[in-house]
Length: 478
Ligand code: ADP
Ligand code: ZN
Ligand code: MG
Image (cartoon, rainbow, N blue to C red; front, top):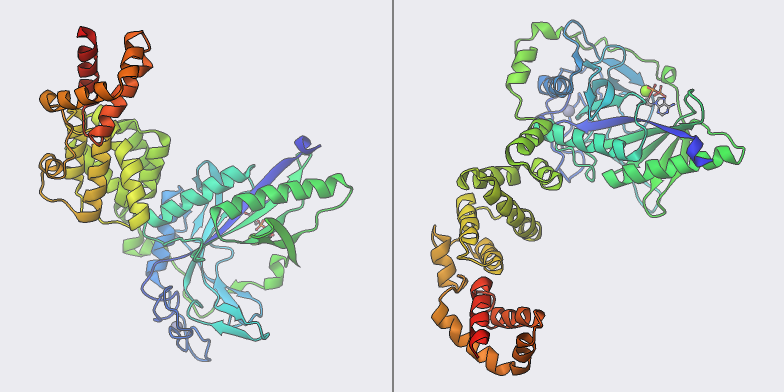
């Protein structure tokens, strides 16, 4: 039975780090370079007689990720090793990585234990054309690459997805990596096994996952597949599987090499690092350079504004939107009720405009946006009017610094002028005599209809409360 099995998942996540130059040479670290083999030099092309030099910026990024996740930083000793294997995308015949002494050991994120975080160099990019030719672009070869490995303690696709998403956020907050999965800047490999007993089952590693959704679906698929194999009397073989996005299933790629086939040994060309002797890598220095971390921001928003989780997450995800939100909140004098209204317009109206047109923050300031919310609260602007004002302002910019004035110019202010509205009410009463009779005979919904007609006639600019009052008064007397 499916229910008898417990899934176990461990993740291995690579991230290309944000640095000016490559990991061991002075070539530019430019992930946007489209022209192949531009950012190369004798060092990253493995010419004899060249020597690698450690990129300190990359080391610092990894130490910061380790510090933020509560890991133990290798202050006393850390070194780089050669991982030997032959493939066209590694010109040296080995990849420089870390084996026994990684930069970071332990730590945790979203409750998942981290085993280690180490630093290595990225491989080049292979391309194959339809005619059977293969090409190698070395622009990516030698870029600084962080690898984080988790303990096998994850028991669902959901938690695996949560871990990967939170790591992406952390990398972005720290400025360590763009961590875009679609662009391959962050790559997640999932190790999956299932077991009926306390002993772990044989694990399978799934690669080529280039979105969070694929990570989750591949894990779900693999759990079901493994249970089916075992239930039908088969055995799980330790192997690497790929993910077929079209078929939404995993497929066998190759049998897994074990680590001793890589014949790791310390790279004699590189110095051992004693981090405690490098002034700007001390733990207090690293921490001083931290921004507010994602989980800290989340907790602060929860405490200060009591936001819905969904809105809170949207702001934590997007630091620019979060900045706009905070400025708006300040201009609403941190009034919780006003902020709730503001968040509604921000999360629905402004966010859909940003999604459709990109950020045009010069067109609408948070102060102006906050003032719109105040107009809604003072019933000077209807909900429709506010939405319209946000749309035109986002597209065309603010006419002045005063949304009340602008709304008036654009005819969006709520009409509360009873004299003007009375004329409209009378006209509607004449046009809908039978509805008026219904209302007089006790049909409450008829009044809603009449108010609706009034809103329509004023293109949404009337104050519905006042309209309702006027209809009630006009039908009472007769
Ligand atoms: P290998 O030597 O095959 O690379 P590791 O012990 O280094 O294996 O683990 C690699 C990854 O696989 C880690 O993320 C680890 O948590 C995970 N892992 C190890 N054993 C299992 C298992 N039985 N089921 C699922 N994941 C596992
Ligand atoms: Zn180079
Ligand atoms: Mg391993």
